[in-house]
Image 1: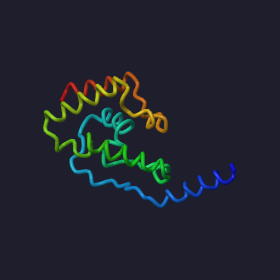
Image 2 (image 1 turned 90 degrees about the horizontal axis):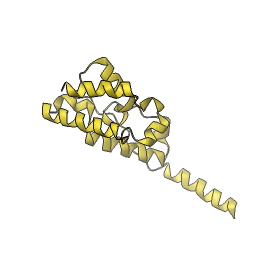
Image 3 (image 1 turned 30 degrees about the vertical axis):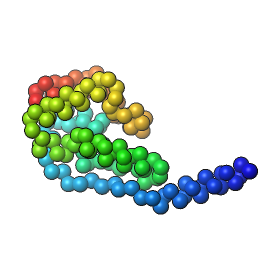
Image 4 (image 1 turned 90 degrees about the vertical axis):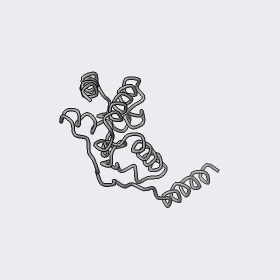
Length: 138
């Protein structure tokens, strides 16, 4: 019986690979312009989900992980997109920066599963201070 279950799971795993997900990077229309230190922190921790410059890892091609990755990127871009930062009003930028800092400080961002695969996305106190100073200057 366990062999049949294992075979069924293997067949299922192979079949779900036929359900593709969209992994695109639209053009960058109005990129964030900030100090290189700020951009470096945001690129390391935020850009994969919050820009049109996503680096799609190998596991973004393997279902069911691909579904989760694509969903995170889609949601992230809808919420805040650093590739469109220049098109936001000054007030909207301030609000986004405030919200971003709040979520970082509360441990809500980056997402825990993203940090698991990308330890470089874990922000230390100095990196958060860089983002806080940048946000205050907006």
